[in-house]
Amino acid sequence: MSRPTPDLRVYTVVDTSVCSLQEAPAVALAAALGGSGIIQLRAKHSPTRDVLAAFIAMGEALAGRAALVVDDRVDVYLAARAVTEHVHGVHVGQSDLPAAAVRGLIGPDALLGLSASTVEQAAAAEALGAGVVDHLGVGAVHATPTKPDAPEPLGYAGVGLVAASTALPCVAIGGLGLPDAAGVRSAGAAGMAVVRAVAGAQDPRAAAASLLSAWEAAA
Image 1 (cartoon, rainbow, N blue to C red):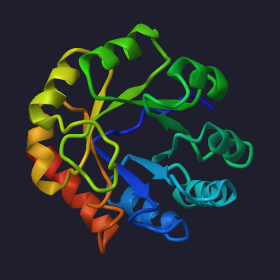
Image 2: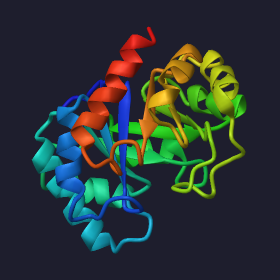
Image 3: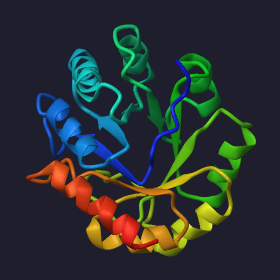
């Protein structure tokens, strides 16, 4: 397996605050069919066994239609990867295992995303060298109830500062929805990550398609 190059334009976070683990595979598939190129499972407070089962089920449902990563849980990724080829990596934050250590654990063919809210954090990620971090999650753009421990909101200008400082692709995240597509794209982001706007939508497929259309219209 070689490392995928995902379409970052619409990055769907399937968070258990808006979607149950049982619903996650269907929501992930709907988002992918709507045009989301990368899906993340975020289950901060669920039992590990249940997170693993949901992650494997999401991979089997997606069957390569979109890249699939898990938030924080290197152990869950490794266990799932032993079962299915349709899981692709991990996203970690600044307080999780260091990115270089994560890369050593997941190997060269997995995706690794890293949260960054400052120019300094982006520079540190880039300084790790080519092939360690694949992309940055930059935010929070706005305050969001799904991430109460997020840094002070950056706004579009803050995203722009980070994106301009690094060659790593930057995905804006934090309270984003349809009205934000033009703002985050003009700030230099490679995509926008959303939680409630897709995983919490009544029709995740239509919601993802609308976000992708808004992103393209902002070109």
